[in-house]
Amino acid sequence: MSQFQGAYVAIVTPFLNGQLDEQGLKDLIEFQIENGTHGIVPCGTTGESATMNHAEHHRVVELTIKTVNGRIPVMAGTGSNATAESIELTRHAKEAGANGALMITPYYNRPSQEGLYQHFKAVAEAVDIPIILYNVPSRTSVNMLPETVARCAQIPNIVGIKEATGDLNQISQVIRLCPDDFIVLSGDDFTSMATVAIGGKGVISVTSNVEPAGMSSMIERALAGDFGKARSLHYKLFPLFQAMFCDTNPVPAKKTLELMGKIKSASPRLPLAEISDVALGKLKKALADYGLI
Image 1: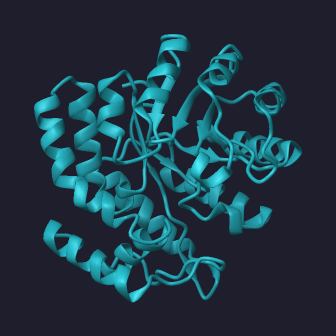
Image 2: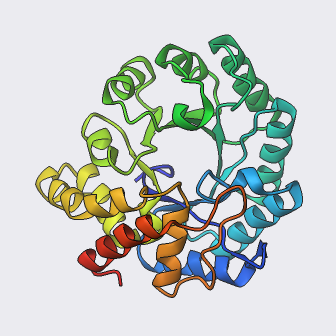
């Protein structure tokens, strides 16, 4: 597999009393590597990057790279809604030794398609690191259109996209319009197997936090063209996919890891709240049915 293929985990950031739980993060990384995860994405949406200051963001990226120690690729989340800040975070990721940078479309500002292109072009020209774009309109209020992705794909170090529209029509257009070596990764666990079936190369996954072996197996089988086995794994995993979004991500994933004994505290940072009682009931049932607890 090429460097940015397979099932990457959008790893949660464990906090204890509001501070980064460094040992907890190291333990999660070891759990991921032992269970076959193909790569790690620190400081993504699931890592609560929006609530971290720069020192914390830098520390999580550095600690992840140091702990992984070259065993699998690390794709650091470096996006922001300010281009200058994105450049700073991306430059730090390169200096820290990241294999690539995952860059979300600027949120809140609602840039035009031209603004999106100029933003990514500015970062790519400022920092020579492989960049994976990240399109998630449900979180950003802006949808980067396939034509804009294709323009960005002409920039040498923009090598792929994490597509989290959940829309196979849009994903197909991206694959059709971009060069053959441009990497399309699903940003939704639900559509990950289907994305590979139409030419994608894998997923950046929330569910991989709690079931890395199952997710990596499903994507490996799909990439090998064994869609019978991949499909059976998809339907086995499907209730877990739903459970991971029974409350705002990463609240269910963190609660699951706490219930599994993988982290000491499931507490997210405000403004995210602890999991609701109703959601917790649904979550526990899905986890028990799957055999995780």
